[in-house]
Image (cartoon, rainbow, N blue to C red; front, side, top):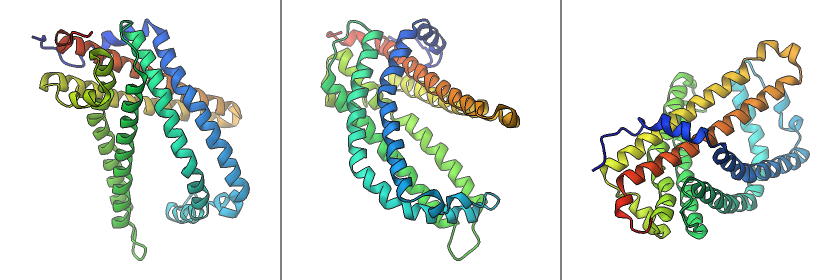
Amino acid sequence: MAPPLRGTQSLVGQMGWVFSRPSLTALEVGWRWLFGVPFLLVCWVQAQHILAAIPLESAGLTGLDAMNPWVAAVQLANAWALYQPHVEAVLRWFAPMAALAWVVISALGRGLVLQRLEPRLRFRPVSMMVLQAAWLVLLGLTLWGWFGSMQAVAAAHIAPGGEPDLVGYSMWAIFLSLGFFTLWALINWAVSLAPLLVLLEGRSALSALGESLKLGRAFTSKLMEINLVMGIVKLALIVLAMVLSAAPLPFSDQLGDALHAVWAAATVFYMVASDYFQVVRLKSFVEFWKMFRSAQSASY
């Protein structure tokens, strides 16, 4: 019988445990940047090709009316109409390649991190790839739902022939963005836990994905609680990174190009801190699995 322990009560202890083992965070950062650096490099190269074909001046982006958001929105829409065919042409080949690279690299990287967390685990890369692909599909569906909702709100509050309702649109935009962010935090724990079940219980990918949906109320509530807290932490990290980026703005005349270094440092801080908390979440998942299911698994 598991002791009555809230999901977040042991979180500080897990944070200290992970912090005292920086190699775990370094490994998480390493596999993410192994994907992210080439991904951003390809994006940069393709963007330069598109801008060479349609310069910013030709698209009207150098004359944006920063004082009138509605005029700026029309200018951006006109510019996007020019760039859209070129962007779609790149996405037709780049999006599948990026998705495949993410599935392979994230499966291998996440498997290595889990093995460092629990050295007795046996690595199963194919099953991990299947589950990482499931995670990516779920993320895509969530983003598609958010984007469709934002389009519906824009159509309702920004009519071409009438006065735009800026307040109503902004309220719905904030509500939907936070709502879908919370929804993602509530639902993605299942695909995040499934790789653990593959390694900890020796299940197949499909069996682990199905089992993650029927773990029992006590175990599931702990996982959802941890996931929600990690979502709040991620929001806090975003706000902190924004504050760090904005703090030097009053001194921009004195800082000059050093301001870009401050922004880069704030971005790197957010990425490393986010990866650290990802490892903390994995460690918490493993500990709660031991509490609720280790006795049921003879393969562990």
